[in-house]
Amino acid sequence: MLESLKAFGDVARLRSETCDKGMREYSKKRKELSETLRQRDFAAKQAEEDRKQKEQKKNKLRKEQEQELKQEKEQEEAAARPLAVGAHALAPQDGSAPEGKLSSFLIISCKTSYHTLHV
Image 1 (cartoon, rainbow, N blue to C red):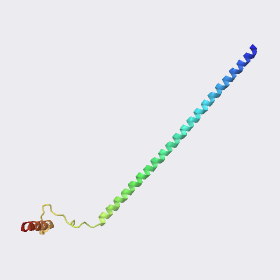
Image 2 (cartoon, one colour):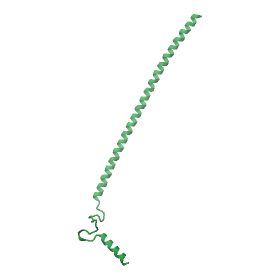
Image 3 (cartoon, rainbow, N blue to C red):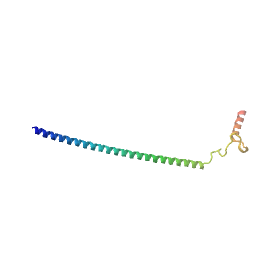
Image 4 (cartoon, one colour):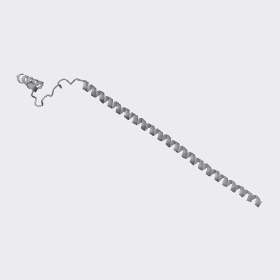
């Protein structure tokens, strides 16, 4: 009976060592798998961020080009458009008429003051 218990103890120890070895291998594989998945997720996120940055740069460049075209078009239209009425010459700031003529401001103000005085 003592020998049978000794043999049983040896088998139990061998089984314990085998289980321990198997658990260590399982833990190692699980860590490797976890690390691989983490790296894959990181690479996917990095690729997505790179794609978004490229798209943002592309949109920014497109908007700048559209803005430049719009400004060029406005400048061309402004150059092609005739001056507004009354903007053909500079009016003197003192109200005097250029080249000896009465300015429209003086005529209007004279008419207004005449009507104000005679009414």
